[in-house]
Image (cartoon, rainbow, N blue to C red; front, side):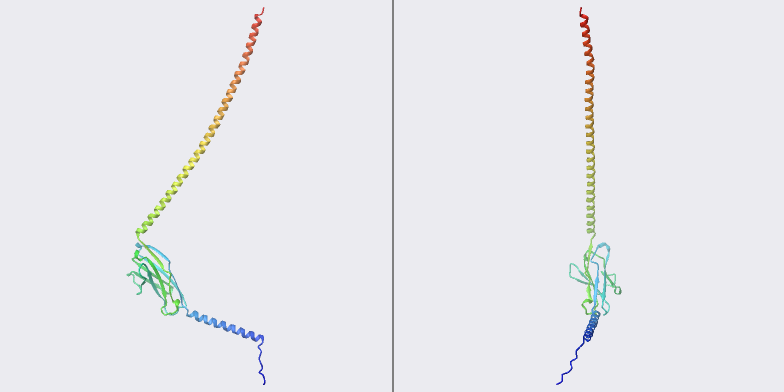
Length: 251
């Protein structure tokens, strides 16, 4: 039996085959990733986290912006929800395009902007308002997204007046504290200056009294010396007079 010749691959042929497989794998990966990216629909929604208004404002508008990528099935639709003390509400299911109702929705879908205006706002409208964007024709999970919600707080004038009064009281107490601190500082400064002046006066009086005492001692010493100098000649004259008298009495 004749054995079939066995073909051995050279190192160059092995490198060529390996390189071709790597290139083919990369091409397949790129194709799959492109197909997957084309099918994925992703929506991102942004809205302000907090709004606070007075009920006398009349109306308040909540802005909502969105962006999307890979969503080609029709136009998006905006949705609004409200979570308050009661059950969650689906707002403006009919569109709310007029200004006569409680809510007004305005859409600029090509610019990625929508807004909800709450007319005749009252404290009962305080709640969390959530903006949602959806592509109804798309079945992708990322085609429907909502924002994190905007907490709306509507305050009455009484609460605002209380806050205003509290702020005034705090400022008054702060001014009183500052004034008291300044008065204490002035009093301490004056007392310190007075104590320094009194000390200087006492020192000067002590110096004056010491000078006076020294002058009195010097004056007393001078007086004693003057008396002694006057007494010495008188004693000499008395002795001479007595001697002359004794000489005269002798025979």
